Structures are given as structure tokens and as C-alpha cells.
Image (cartoon, rainbow, N blue to C red):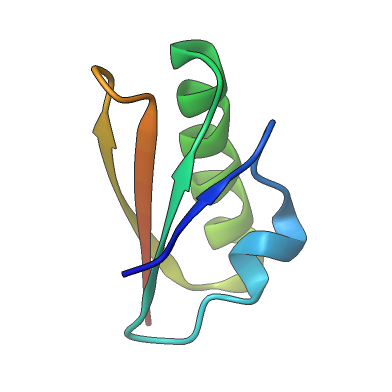
Length: 68
């Protein structure tokens, strides 16, 4: 599993995740993790897909999975 270090997670990053796949991002702050989680759920509603989010606040790391 590849961990990408980013300032924030953008919609384009979420759209690139294949169905049944996941992506892990290391972010600078816990607030950025909350923002990424919110962005995933909002985009999921727009696209009609479901994102599952797991956050590790001790590492400021978020894993986002995409399903139908």
C-alpha cells in the first residue's frame, strides 16, 4: 500500500480511486483529516458511490476506500 503525503485531499484524488480500491494519505494536521473525510462523503453523494474512511489521528493518516 502506497502512502501519499499531501497538504489536502482533492476531489480529483478521490475520483482516481478505483472501485473496490483504496488510497492512503498522510496529511499535516488532524483538521486536514476531518476535511478529507467530509470531502469524501460529499463527493460520494454527488457521484452515487460510497467511500469508507478510516483515520489514524496519531499519524495524521487517512485511508479512503471506494465501493458502489
